[in-house]
Length: 151
Image (cartoon, rainbow, N blue to C red; front, side, top):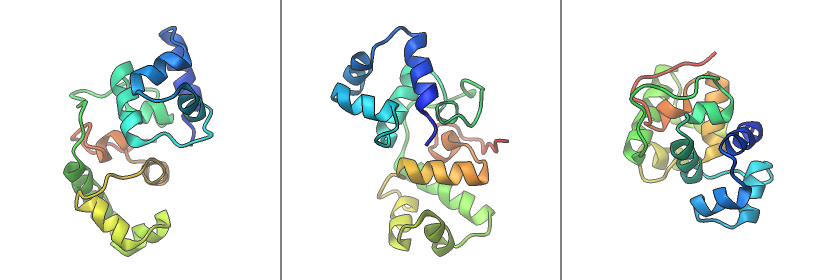
């Protein structure tokens, strides 16, 4: 992952300490430190909380764009919408569930549960799809409704 620099920049821009961000996320300061230093992968729910708190897109946090945010950005996500967007993306790119599951190194059952809204996509899978196919993480998560392809 490559969100370390953006998390540090955002935190410093608002003159916050790591323990203050940890309090916002309701986690231990050492856990946030591990996220910020990329020793642990930040879960989607915390990524969304930080995106909302700082008013920036997840694409911005991931370093996919320098655009801070998108118009009509939503603060809440719905796992059914995430699944729908992922399925639409997969079909548009003429991939089977098996093909995408193999790319992500997960079972087809796992991918099926994400597409059906049972499970939420994990951060590494989201990042992997977005970085390879240049599609917006915010779109796949339903934070924006328009499909957005990044450079």
